[in-house]
Image 1 (spheres, rainbow, N blue to C red):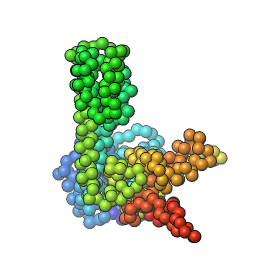
Image 2: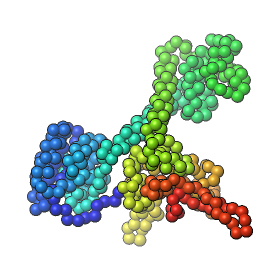
Image 3: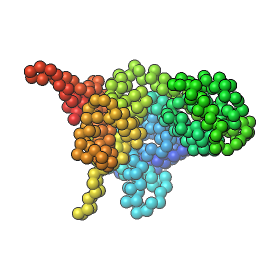
Image 4: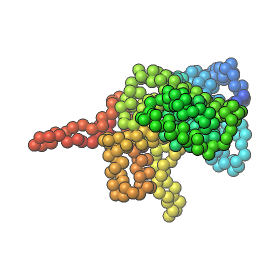
Amino acid sequence: MTANTKSRFYGLLVAVDVAKRYHDVLVQWPDGHQRAFKVANTRAEHLRLCDYLLAHDLPVRSALEPTADFHRPIAYQLAEAGIEVHLASSLACARIREALFTSWDKHDRRDAMVILYLLEHGVTHPFEDPLRAGYLDIQEFSNTYHQIALARTRCQHSLVNHYLALYFPEMERYLHTSRAEWFCRFLLRFPVPASIQALDRATFIEQAWDVVGRKVAKQRFLNELYELARGSMGLPVPVDSPAVMTYRLQIQRYLDLTAQRKDLERGAEQLLSPNPDYRRLRTLPGVGPIIALTILAESGDLRRFRHHRQYLAFCGFNLAASQSGQSKSSYRLSKRGNARLRYAFWLAAAVAMRMRENSFRTKYERYIRSNPTDADLRRKARTAVAAKMARVAHALIKQETDYRGYYEAAIPGGGTLLTRAVGPVGIP
C-alpha cells in the first residue's frame, strides 16, 4: 500500500512505541499540545487507553512501529474500538530519528516522538488486522508450514552433510528428491554398513524388500546396496553405539517433520477449497496449493490494492534506482516488500516456464531471444515473469475471474490460430 498523503487531520494523533511489557504512548491534540504516558501490555490497560482516547469526542488516528508480534494485541483492541490504526516502517523510523536528533541514539520516549512525526506527515500505512479481516487461520497455516519446512530442510542437511558423510557416504547418491521417504525408512532400519553386513544377502533382500518401496528392478537394486555396504568407506561404528542412536533420532525427526508437513498440506486444502480466491489462484500455471496458501496468507485481501503497481510494491517487485548529479545506477528490484511473496511468485514462475505452452513461458522466451546464453539476461527474464505472475494474480482476484492461458481465434480461409492471452483481458 502507498503511504498516506499529507493532509490536516483534525483530531487526536496517537503514537505507540511497542514493547514486550509496557508501551510508550504519546498523544497530540489538534492545538499541538502533547501528553506522554506508559501503558502496561494487558487487556485491561488496552481498554483503558481506548476509553481515554475516545472520551475526547474527536477522531483518533494511531500509529505503531511493528515489533515482532507484540503490536498485534493492542492494534486489535484499538481497531475494535473504532480507532484508525496505522503502521510506521522501522526503516523510516531509523532514518527520521537520525535526521531529527542527529544521532543513532534511541529510547522509548524518542521513538514515540519519531512515530508521531511520521503519522503527522502522512508517512504511515493503514494496518489490516488478520483476525478482523478473516484470514488469520490462513496466515497461521502458512507460518506453521514455513517453520516446519525450514526445520525439515535443516534436518535433511544435517543428515546429508554430517551423518551420511560419517557413517554411510555411498547412500547419498540415492537421495534424488526430498520427498523420498523410503530413503529415510531404509536408513532407520539399516543406518550403517555394519547393520547390512551382519546379514547374508538373501536375508537382507528379504528384510529390505518392503522398506525401499516400489522400484524398477528391485532385486538388482538391493544387490547393489548390499555390495555398497560391503565396500563402504564409512566409519566402522557398532550398530548399538550411542552415536548411531543419535543418528536414528535425527532420521526419525525428519520422518516426523515430513508427516507434519503432509498433514498441514491436507488441512490447508480442506480449509481453502471453499474459498473462491483460492480456486482462482489455482488456475494460474505453476500455482499449487502451498503457493496459493502463501499468496493469500501474506497478501490478505488483494482487493485492497487499488492498482497492480501498489501490489507489486507490496511484494517488492517495483523498480528503484539511485541518482546523484551525473551519476545514476541502473534500475533494479527495490526488494523492500514481502520477501515470502516474492519467493512464492518466483517459484510459481519457475514452474510455469517449464510447462509446455503458456503466456509466461512465451514472455520468458521472448525476453531472452536476443541472447539465450546470457545468464544475466535469463535472470532478468525470470524476474520479469515472476512480477507478471504477481500482476496477473492481483487481476484475477480483483476482477473475480479465472485465468485464461490461450484462446483460439479463427484464421481467414479456415483453421485456427492460438492467440496469446494472459488471464483477464488487458493484462500485458
